Amino acid sequence: MLPMCRRIALYGKGGIGKSTIASNLAAALAGSGLNVLLIGCDPKADSTRNLTREGIPSVLETLARSEEVSIQNLLHTGDFGVSCVESGGPEAGIGCAGLGISTTLEELTRLGVYDMDWDIILYDVLGDVVCGGFSVPMRKKHVDTVYIVTSADFMSLYAANNILKSVKRYSYTEKPLLGGILHNRADSAKERAVVQEFCRKTNSAYIAAMGQSTEIRLAELQRQTVLKAYSDGAAAQAFLELGRRMAGPGQASVPTPLCPQDMDAVGAAILRLLQDEEAGE
Image 1 (cartoon, rainbow, N blue to C red):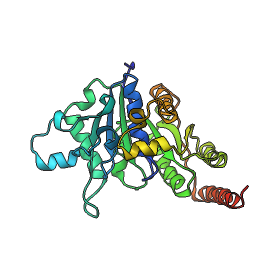
Image 2 (image 1 turned 45 degrees about the vertical axis):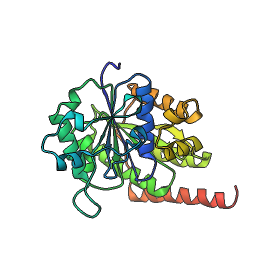
Image 3 (image 1 turned 135 degrees about the vertical axis):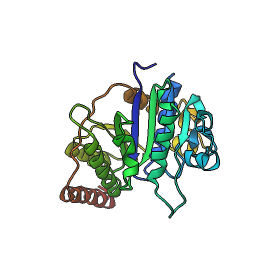
């Protein structure tokens, strides 16, 4: 047990691997003996799939078909005892995606889920849509620390910079929110250098570099985490180490997001990287 519950949110551009990291991180933390709640805040409702094998009913789906909503039909137990919730969202092209998050947090509060004996509450939040609904975990003070998942791809860093603007807005001197940057698909020293420079310029800690992994890809195809499918592998050990680091108190900061001109400079650095790779340097 931890002295107090750690409330962590992972944000990032869609498709960056955020949900894969969230599910594996939840498995690593729960496998270490901690009581973990994973809340998927993405309309695709796929944050918990690798822990439950099949998709679980989302909060919005449950509310739509039942007037009587209980903790038992919102929380679903996955591998390693992780408690899983999916907010869900409207059909494509209909309604507001952020509404699912707002409704989910309201229901969890009403039912007393946040008052239960959690060590870790982990949110997996879509981060490339500029919508107030996706900032609710920060705005309503449901999180203590925000980590942003990115690669060295320009659009991923562009989304990360936009997320930093929200983190800055909802941080204050006594309670900074930014835990740091998780660099996914960090497959070369030059890519790491690009993201590390982005971190330096934005006052963001470079927390971890995670390269492409065959173990992770194979586990995903089996709808499992690497902690379940390849528990002795390098990827599983990396998530265990990341979990130990993120479960600790850590150091948070108030970020300094980049202006458009500075983001253009980031794009120029990525262009040079790609040109060097093309030239075989």
